[in-house]
Length: 395
Image 1 (cartoon, rainbow, N blue to C red):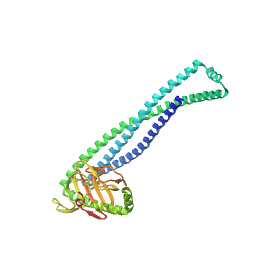
Image 2: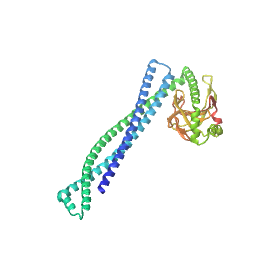
Image 3: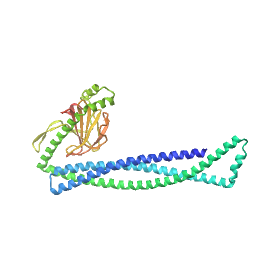
Image 4: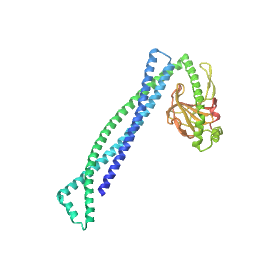
């Protein structure tokens, strides 16, 4: 009876491990699809960069493509590391499963061999002796059923032993494949890092060229003004779906939609800062002394170290995650009743579309994507189509 329990326990543990391995297989497959998509995008932009160089087109256009590719390569390396972590976790489970299986196989072999030796020594007559020694027919029947159960258990035990050996062989093969894939993944990460460093050097050179060229500076200024309009159009699009997000926001906060619609306005002057740093460009008119131009800054620019934490200024729902040439990786959070906060030039983005975020929760890190003058966060606040001065809203 004890041995039957042992077999059942072994069977359940093995199948639990196999279920975990299968779950990792699915997650790795999904991760691989995302990696293939990123590889394709990186390759496409590489071709564009090379063609731009050959045709000697605008340095601004080349710079924007370099910037976009750097961001994609960062995403690619991040996804590679994520996939590698899944594979390493699966390899760990496989290792533990194989080690456990080998122990079970050894125990099952010893017990089965002991049973065979006992049967050989005592002979088949031993079973008949047990039946004949029964004091009454009822006891003889019980002993007969017991002996039959033992015989069936032995057959099952032998079959399970064979299955376990086969399953362990398969797991060892899978482990070998995974370890090989992990090594390849490490190589791809190094290659991606090398390409990223190369593109960063090219970006630095392009930036220097632009700073020396008045025409390129004017082109950059024009491009940025066009990209400011893109954010405005995005906000317009988001306004069409704001009722659904307001209802979701109210549900998450366990308040009425009326209370939710007033939540942001009540925070004027006390919103948490999105990042710790120095404000280098304020909201409103900005004069370019070199070009002699005046442009409108739709938000504020906060210089901060690369990788510094960017936080949501208030509770809300992530309404858009996008890429805009002059602003790079950009997040827009809907705070209800037509109020939005915009975060640009991000490096890492750690939130997803339609995700509910709390005030002060991390949404990404400071980068220089789309930035022509180093690491910083460009931050905006909107009320429907109106741009607001963030400094009047932050603490």
